[in-house]
Length: 117
Image: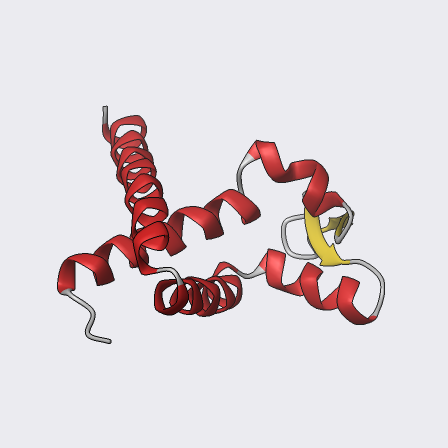
């Protein structure tokens, strides 16, 4: 199966959006809470309080917690899922990727706007 540049870009933006949704967005906070815990610590250099986010538990719970801390790590697994979906259900995957890509572009535009304007 040959993949076009457009499909590659759409899938890449979709992976970005799903990864961001899982790791950072408020809507998935309750889900992440099953795998992550926050710990308050004092920074030795500045003396300020800081929050550490750590993976909870053991086994699968800890593995998923570690994924939800690292967007680079999670994006690899999301990429595997999207690649498999693309090979098995290309039409459905591209529709999903197109929708998520639009949301990713909107998120980037919003971040630029909030940061610079």
